[in-house]
Image (cartoon, rainbow, N blue to C red; front, side):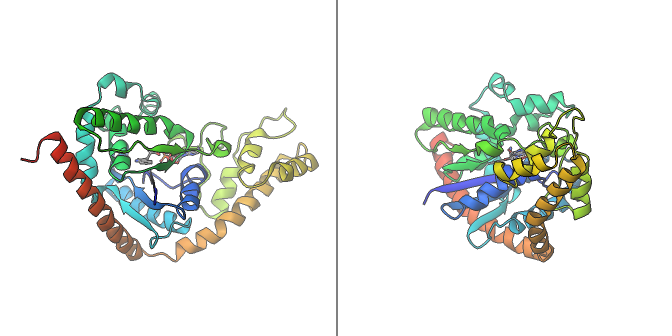
Amino acid sequence: MKRLLTGLQPSGALHLGNWVGALKPFVELSREYESFLMIVDYHALTTLKEPEALRENILGIAKDYIAAGADPEKSTIFKQSDVPEHTELAWIFQCLVTVPFLQQAHAYKDKVAKGLEANAGLFAYPMLMAADILLYDTDIVPVGQDQRQHIEYAREAAAKFNNTYGELFREPKEHILDSVATVPGTDGQKMSKSYKNTIPLFGTKDEIAKAVMSIITDSKAESPENVYNIHSLFRTRSELSELYKANKGKYQALKGALIEDIEAVVAPMRERRDSISDDDVRRILKEGSERARAIAGSKMNDVRRAIGVTI
Ligand code: ADP
Ligand code: TRP
């Protein structure tokens, strides 16, 4: 069976973009693959330095995964920091790639341009992500468009290692749905936890409504483009074309329709989420990390032998 793996950072509440870009495709594909779903808490450490918030986000995101349909019986759901082989392998990859190569990473440049601290962890981030993926001989990685280059970096790390030490890693492929490659936020830019333009996935109906009502619209346009683009995640083009024709110029009504469409999808997931306790999460992550460690540990034994530190 081929392997599927993805990860999300516990750096804040998940939004519609995370769900549509990564979590929903993961859940849909996980039926056909041996699947791994990670909480990449050490990646979140590049930007989040509040222990209490990190703890809460980890518990929260695990609940989000399960509420969105990830099945802990069928998928290995685990926390990156519980499998120390990830940071260990990241170091080895860092010794294989150059500084100019890492300097070309769009995600790093964008984050620094947005004012985030250029710490060394943020800089080396793609090599930790490469380790996350390559340790499990992953075939497919469902992500949003913004992560395409990071998957290329993972392939590059695999190739560098294989050329230097002999064939050990499989080169993974990204899985990016064209239709939802980049979900726009309330300001029309990429929806992102760091840009304060999100529609929360598990917010209350009021929170979702408030975010939808704040979507920026161009008062001169016939159809509110930013509203339409988000709406197209929930309805077909033909359904939308009727609705938007019937409500030409009526932005409030269209936003109201969008709120109801989001609510119809989210309400059952929200209910499921409320039934999951912190202790359920601890148990699931413990079992998941044991399964993950068995695989990662055996791969790292091969790596240590290949690079010459096993004597
Ligand atoms: P954020 O930018 O909100 O911090 P992350 O970087 O944690 O999100 O992304 C987690 C996953 O969600 C990644 O696979 C990413 O590509 C996907 N994703 C994030 N934002 C969007 C978006 N606006 N549209 C589509 N996918 C997205
Ligand atoms: N960099 C990804 C993001 O910000 C998160 C991530 C870390 C990831 N490790 C991964 C995604 C491995 C897929 C596979 O969204």
